[in-house]
Image 1: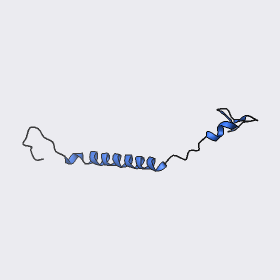
Image 2: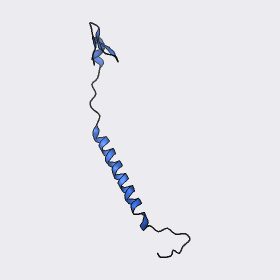
Image 3: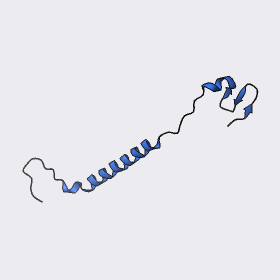
Image 4: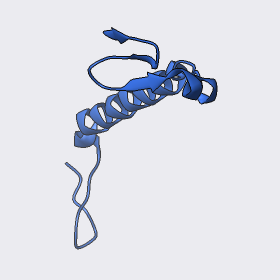
Length: 71
């Protein structure tokens, strides 16, 4: 927010910009939110897959030493 404006330039509490330096300022576009959405969706799918695997863990039989007894 601009709070100071005089013959040298303008500025606020964080910075003061001289008029002769303003020619070198660049405008940046907004951050691509599509990448963030894909990361969130991928994380949700990974958690869902993990929950599914844990929920179906009772169908896995691991026995040592072999041969396994049938339940």
